[in-house]
Each structure stands twice: as C-alpha cells, then as structure tokens.
Image (cartoon, rainbow, N blue to C red; front, top):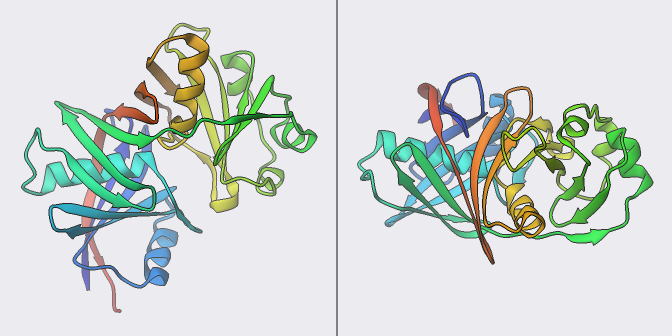
Length: 264
C-alpha cells in the first residue's frame, strides 16, 4: 500500500520553524492501530490522516502515543496540502469532519483561517502540584480541556523549565502557559506542554488558542489578537474571538513530500 505523505511546517512562512505536521492522504480509513503506528514512526507532535467524504474530508489527528480530539497546526497543514496538491480552488473553503465536529478552513492568499470551537476555561485554584511541575507559581489558573496557567510577563513564560514527568500526571491533556506580551511584539505569548500524550513541548499549538483567545479577548477588551508561541522553533497566529467560535489563522510551508510504503 502506497500512501502520499507530506511534512508541513505550520504557523510559519519559513521551513525549520513553526510546528511540523505529517499529512497522509488515504483512499479509505485504515485500522486505528496502523494509524497510531504511522504517527509513532513519524515522531512528530501530530500526524493528520485525510479521507475524502463526498465534498468534505474526514480528518483525524494522532500524536506518537494517542489520538486527540482537536489539533490546529495539523489541520492547517492538511488544508495546505489539499490546496497545493489537489484541484481545490484558491478561494474554496474546505470542510473537515472531525471528533470536534465540522471544521472549516478558508484561505486568503498565503493565510489559512481555521474556524474552531471556543473552549473558555473556568477559574480554579492554583494547585501545588501544578506549581511544582512548572517550577514557578502562576498568577491565575483556568481549566478547559487543558490547564491554562497565566503568568505575569513574557519572561516568566520563556524561562519555564517544567518537570515533564510531573506534568504528565496532571488530569488534563495539556498545560498552557501564557502571559501578555509586554515586549510589544504581539498581544500575548504562550507555550504548550502535553507529555501525557507524548508531546513534552509542542512548538505551536492551534487548539490551545480555543482557550487562549476567549481569555485574552476578555482581558484585553479586543476581539482581534496577534499571538506568538515562544517555543524554540516559534510560531505566529492571528486570531479572532467570535463568541462560541474562534478564528485561528496562520501560514504554512512544505518541507518534504514522498510516499509511505506499507505492507499491510
């Protein structure tokens, strides 16, 4: 079995930055064990699998260790591949059927815009195990799918050196660390850690902005937000708060394409 495969750097306009995602174009769904094995072999934070379903596409995301319910950078990467390597028109909106429902991705020149559900967090106490795992006490904590830990400034977020073994024991998929960007480069910055699903630090995380955008829109009193993820690779996102939905936009660039040869 030959599977067209693409390695895309998402939320960036240059290779070797942003978040790399694998994209596999399938003719039909394979056994879940095979999909998980491919993702584990790729060793990227997510591999996206696509199957055409009428005019839409079925889309699933796998980390090296687990399937996840929502992934931004691999959705952007999947849309980039479809626009670049299929007959989809430049201005055509792509509809994906996913574990998080119907997701649409539009395109304006080199910018791809993801329509995602908003996932605002509820305030919770600052727990001692979270502080110990992050190595620094956050000012505020909120809980959605992920834990949102708010810090005083960009420097605090940049200097975090988490204990990933401790983070993996927390009852959540991932931990978002965020602060207002007091350097003036953007509205806010973040980092994202998900060691419980095999991703110690994710370079750029679209899904975390389903929680970040409602928080920062309310705190800053604005619905259009410029975000930076300050991982080692770094990434840039342009976001809009739309109430029950958020718009997350970014660029992507192809690093490689090839074929997976599977004897199954």
